[in-house]
Structure formats: C-alpha cells, structure tokens
Image (cartoon, rainbow, N blue to C red; front, side, top):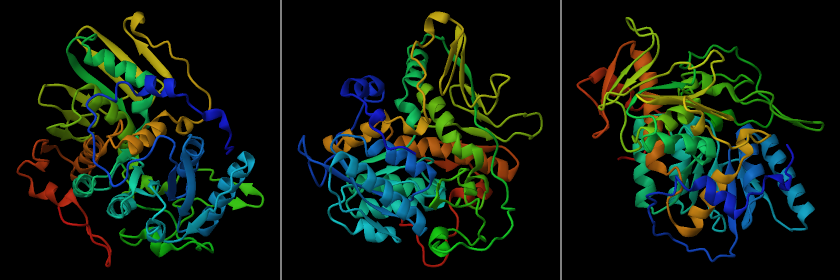
Length: 436
C-alpha cells in the first residue's frame, strides 16, 4: 500500500466532515497540553491489514510522527518499520523507529503520546486499559470490546485517567452518513417507524483445521486472555517482504465465536452505530432483542422504548451493508458511497471518493485534534460502548435462541440469570479484567 500524500485533508474539509459530531463535546483535563506546533508521537499496537490502512492515514497528518510498533508476529513489525522509514526518508525526515513483540514495552516509553490499537477483538479491552493507565491516549478499532463488562470497565478507565479515547467507527466522519442522520434528526422523514440495518449474520464455532505455526509468530501472546484455539493461517494472515505480498484476506478470527462476533459486531459496529445515532440512542439502547429464526421472526430484531423497530434486514436486492430509515413521511437509504431518498431533494450531492474506505482520514484527524485540545472526539468511549453493546446483545440472543430483555439505563438484563452469564467470559490463567 502506498504511503503517498494524496490523503492529506485540509482543515476546512475536516471541519465540514466533523461538524455534526462536534456537538456536545466534553472538555477533558489531561496530563499534557500540546502547543499548536508540537508534534504528537504515535505508536501502533497490532499490525495487520487494518493497521496498515490506519498507518497510511495517520502518518500523513501534519504534526504527527509515527515512532514505534508492537506485534506478536515479527514479520509484521518489519513491514511496519520498512514502510515508516521509507515514508520519512522521502520527506527528508530522520526518525528512529523501534518495534517490539510485547506491547507493554511500547507503553513504557515516555515519548509516545498516543497509541493506535488494531488487534483482534479479544485483546481490545486489556491493551486499551493498560495504555490508558500508562498515560497514553488511545485510538481503538471497533467493535470497542469483546464483552459488555469489558466495555463498562474501559469506559470507567478512560474517565478515571482523564484520557482521550477515540473509536474507529469512521462512518461518523463520512459526509453521507452525517447528512442522513441530520435529516432524520431534523424530522424530515417524520416520526421514524422502522430502521433496516443490514450487516450479516452471527459468528460460528471455530472449525478451521490445525496448521503448522510459522516462524516468528508468538501464538501464546496472540491468544492473550482468549481460551486456547489452534493456529490456522486465516486467523493471522501471512505476508512476505521479499517479494512484498500483503494480506489477501481480513483476519478470519472475527468470524468465529471463540474470538470474534461475526458480521453482527464487525459490520454492526458500523451500521447499528449509525442507526443508534439517527435514533438519538447514543446514551441508551434497545429494550428487547429477538434472534432471527425465533418463531415468526425472520430477522434479528431490536425494539426500543419509543416503539421503533430495527431489523438486521436487507433494504435492497443487492443486500448492501447499510441503513434505511423509514419514517411516516419518507425514507432514506445510506451506505458507503450510496445515498437514496424518497424525496430526491434530500439526496446527498457528495461525490464518492476512490480508494479503500479505511484510508479516508478525517476521522483520524478528528482524533488528533481531540488529543491536542483535550476534548472528546466524534466517537468517544461512551458511544463506542453503547453501539458495541447493541451488537453483543444480538449475538447473545442468537446463542440463547430466544428473546432477551435489556435495561439500557442500568445496563443489565431484565430477570434473566442465563443471559447474565454472557456479560463477560472467563480469561485464560494469568489475565484479569480490572474491577468495575
């Protein structure tokens, strides 16, 4: 992937794309106040395919310097080091890039101001918590955490340590999604009756065959708190440097319930997130969740206290992953690069940009601006936690094979001892989640 300067975004463009998310920002005290021209030093933890997209964005932001990385697979550290050095060499900038196997060694550095965490979901909470406690600000990939309890603890840790945490739900910095949500919240569609949020199905049990471990991969550290599963290359896709060959697939861990949440969390953290935003439920959530296949329910269904129904259901024949808001007075369909409305005058005039979606960097600029100004980014921890909870609740209902009731105020299941067991899961020996 090229580290060109073509992804630079102007200050004006950033303001335009983040204007909706800027409402209600919280000003946070911090350990360090950055001067306008002071460089923010970044470290990366987890160096798979998504991290390389994020690197391409962050490294091109003015006032940011990428200095370090940590990954349990040595060849991915080498790829990172090579790309960062090549980028700065072209710019005539001298840097001392260091790589580590253990993320704790990176966090011990006092010159690193913030970290970008793009590891498998089962590691999200513990690494982010350690980073926050070490005084680092955090850009954390979605979904925020693997369990609901992890999300509660992470939220608490952010606020107790006065840190900035931004969630990688970059659709909130996309002008098309911002335009759609503004129309919904301005009442242009009338009272919302139903939301279609198509994301795909839940995870399945791990069924990949056992393979020989490649040299340079510390599988025990890759597993971390996760119960043991055997190695298969799809979990941590291989790469090569000579000749250079990058990942051909996304890390397959996300499709298996032992390590990920399937499409329910992978795409739900994007599309359910937009639905929650549009419905004004960023600080709340559904009250009843029914899995697809239960009695006459064809789709995973969420019910809200205001009567709105959200289904994990396609809204067109192409089965586009996106969101459709259906109101009494009209409808809007929105997805990546797609916008359609019952009233043509509502349709977005924003042109679709070329290139991978993950390389668009207004969302990343927003995080850097939040670090500088010590205020909440567009997607702070509270929003990331609520959206992640919606996804996880869907998977819990699938596992139980029946409806579950949820109290979004107390964040507890309603008279359901069996469902309560899914609030968290047992870690491997040697790993502990801090207390709430």
